[in-house]
Amino acid sequence: AQKVTQAQTEISVVEKEDVTLDCVYETRDTTYYLFWYKQPPSGELVFLIRRNSFDEQNEISGRYSWNFQKSTSSFNFTITASQVVDSAVYFCALKETSGSRLTFGEGTQLTVNP
Amino acid sequence: GAGVSQSPSNKVTEKGKDVELRCDPISGHTALYWYRQSLGQGLEFLIYFQGNSAPDKSGLPSDRFSAERTGGSVSTLTIQRTQQEDSAVYLCASSLSQSRDTQYFGPGTRLTVL
Image 1 (tube, rainbow over the protein chains, first blue to last red):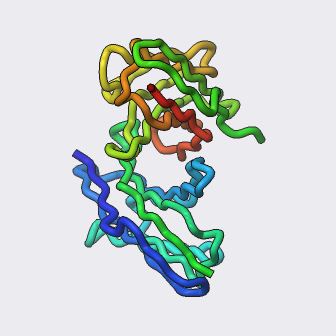
Image 2: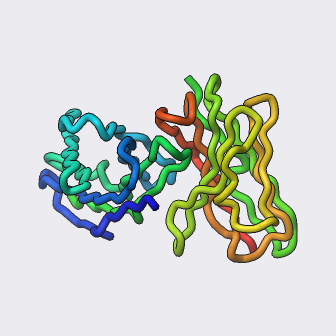
């Protein structure tokens, strides 16, 4: 069965610090997709990125970057030069191609202090 | 374009009453999903629709929960004889298709059962 683990329940940083959110997953499927979603205080889940299991190339989008390593079953998310607006709960999720559901981690509450 | 919409945004009900939650997916999205987010259980999958049929209902917690989708668009999640443990945020998501597409979430309905 699939599982996603986000070991960091809460992280608190000061503005402009870099921060990395960890995500480790388990799956028996050889083909799957990994996602990161952001949930700000307003509550809506906002899609950030999707990664296919056959594409291990890391990705950078502005201040955000993602490090996908199949060998360690990890898909970590780094925010560079954090800002107060980055404060939110961040969820990592897994979708196996054989199934329909997203399996979410427990989420990491990130607080960026001014 | 318009995103996923859900109504009502908040619902307070008394134990034992029935409630209906509505989801309007992104236009053209054939796949629709319901999830539940509660403090103790995190984000849980409930049901998946492809068109008007529900190939995966495995996440529905009891027979008090049911859902339907009509015209390949709007979906209604019904909870009969509500219990206090049903209190949660009910999230709807849609995607272009099931197998590989990103799920986009609505703002959710916060259900409180007194």
